[in-house]
Image (tube, rainbow, N blue to C red; front, side, top):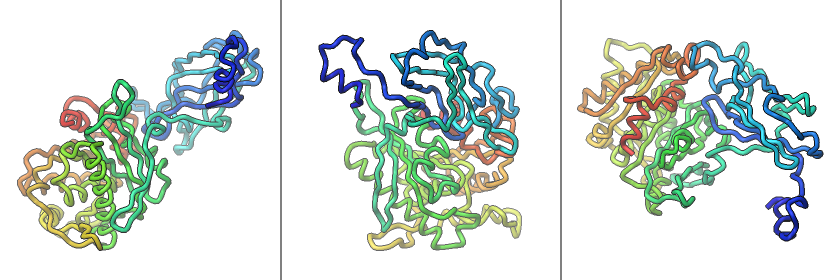
Length: 421
């Protein structure tokens, strides 16, 4: 309880005119966007409330405010400052709230992708606010998450879990669950940074979907190209998956999530991790979305086929081979449940011009499963022009998770997912 509220409780018979002013400071309200945080409003609390008297929206100017992606989705061109800021102001005693069209918290991306800082200015009141002036922030979805750590298979990993609530604000029981696998760029980083790096945890909650979402911070080194050649790396990937599955089992045992409605998705190295997850635990999941998947199954990227069709042959063989599972003491080789693996539908998504994880990996995974008998898989390859409709593309064609998580059009992967919840 803040000082102002404490005063009201203690002196409940005083008139409103005796209420204390708010403590001076600047708070931002933000959410997780496609390219970091997006700010949608700011509270500016000043020592002297008289400076706020009579302020209106037209007294404010915003610069450096733009889309949360490098490209303007409406034009496909490099994003510039908004032409319509949609500023709204309200005043409560010595606190001014300024609402506006959400913009990227780090400012507009300029030349060489360097950020041009944003600035909110009101000459009439002598107010100027930049990102450096923010004293505290509130972040939608993340602030409502359960945060903790979990130990299993000799590992301890931090996690964030978002649980949907009913109309009375009570946590719902037996809800579906989507577990998101982080990309290689997020390994060994603080948990919040892994969440903000993409919208895997927050996308469904922001849409109002009553589905729990889960994300772990993993301490692997980057899976790297041809990780499948290194048993210790693959064993660690599978160990991380075993830990995540054990945590999910604890949620099922508590009646928090529905064990018949489990979903997995991830991008880049997380797309490869999603593939490994399905190879280990396909009988547990209803569906999965590997996005721009890396190659922890067999070497595909940065190597040449010895003959046409070698990658396909190698993946077909790998899908009929072993994964590692925890036996209570160590990770041991275990046969893949091929029938369960092939009967679990996968929706592969990839950008056609991805130069980091080339689209051949998704084609090979899709075709190998089809050759083995999978009947319900789908594959969506995004063109550069389609990527730019969601603010990425060009040099950023690896960022197909942006398109994945923002695209709910009919037949899209997210539309497909929602229909199964």
